Every structure is written in C-alpha cells, then in structure tokens.
Length: 320
Image (spheres, helix red, strand yellow):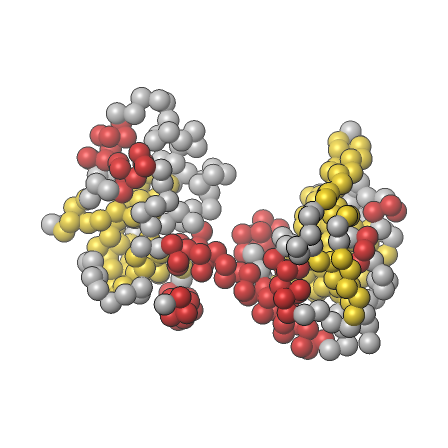
C-alpha cells in the first residue's frame, strides 16, 4: 500500500523562512513552512487531518505527475524540486479562488512540492496537491503539499470531496449565522438612493462617497419578497437592498443586482460602519406606498441561486 505523508502544524508555533531569488530582473518570494512541523507517514489520513490540509490551501486538485525535475514556468530550479503535473480534477472548495484560476482540468502546472512531502513522488504517480499559486505566466506555478493517493482510493476521494464541500460551505454558513433576514424573491426595481439618503450622502464633503476611497456608487434594489426562510413571520412584502455598483477590488465580489434577478438574499444591517449605517440602512424608504426597510448583502455568499434553498434550510435547521 502506498504511504502518504501529511504535514501537521496543529498546536505548534509556526516558524517561516522566506527565500528570495532574482529571476529575470524580478524577485519571486517562496514561503515555505519548514520548522515546527510534524510528519505523519502512513497509508491514509484521518478525516480531521485531511480537512486541515484542504482548509490550509488555496485550492486542491488531483493530478498525475508527468515530469519530475522539470518546469514550464520561469523561476524554478532543481533546488525547488519542481515537477510538471497534469490536473485531472479540481475540488471546488473555494469558488472565488477558482474563478481567478479558470478551468484547470487537463492543464499542466509546475508544482514546487513541500520538501517534507516529496518522498514517493515520481513520474506517473497520482497524488492530491494542496496548493497555493505562486507564478502566473502562460502556465501556472504553485507550491504544494502532495499526498500520493492510497490504495483505498474510493474512500480517500470520498473523504477528500467531503472536506472540500465543508470548506466551500464556510462562507455560506457564516453569512447565514450573521444574517438578520433571509428571503426569496425577485428584483422589481433598481434605482438611485432615496432622496433622503442621497441628500445625506451629498452633505459629506470629503470628495468620496461615505468615507470610502473605493467609491462604492451605491444603488438600491427593491425586492418583492416571496418567502421568508429564517423564520415564518414577520414577512415583509418588499425590502430594499443597498449595493455597490463599482467593480473595483474592494467591492468587486459584492453581488450586483438587476431587475428580474431572483434568488435567495441573506440580508444584514451590520456590514457597514456606524455613519454609513445611519444614512443607508436605518433610514427607511417607500415603494408603492409600502414602508421598506433597507439592508445590505455585501458578501459574495449573501445572494444565492434558488437551487440552494434546501441546503440553506438545512444549515438553518442545524444552527437552531
């Protein structure tokens, strides 16, 4: 049976060493955790250990080693123990990270393997790589901890996939726990801020919108509520969701809304600082004669497709 190697940093003080190498006029910083590590060599990993590896990496993929000691990106040499690995599948543990990386299936990455997990790695060996991106060129270079797939492959892959799902659900579970109101519905209007809010925005003469150099360019979406999910009552007929229309690096991940968008909203009144909350959230609006309370949904997980309804109901049920 193939032995697997796991690097555990639990309950240990992390010590890190940064290695700088000049490459073609630029420097690549490689961060390796080299001290204070415990190595477990055995045929399989416990579920807890597997979860730690998944949680500690940017993305996790299963790949086949094609060329040990070779690289298809600049900046790696033999001291990094590089290898070219063909990606067979990617575990969807972090959707935001995967959006930036694109579809990696079938691509060949250069992997600099953590020194303590190199044993047993050779051409044509299949392994799981717990990776962090390092170099972006025509190809991608990553640093990773590698775990050769054991003989009990089916059980190992099942537990790996379960660990990835648990990690992927963390943002959703967090936002559900922090939400003040969870509703399904449809956007019936998107408009500029109500006049009473806009006036207060205009009274802040600092050259930016509400103390933010990122210029959120706030608008509000009026949601016709179909169902309240977190509790039966009270169910408002309409809610206002104040959202940033900018796509800059700070507010880019925040959901943007258009008329006829439908789904599930996890709504908050604690995502902004006090002055922003006083102006944007606490001042109610009116829509077709209805008094409408305003909320925000700034986290990427705060707007979900209606297909996630059962999953969200299950998470809410577990937290009660």
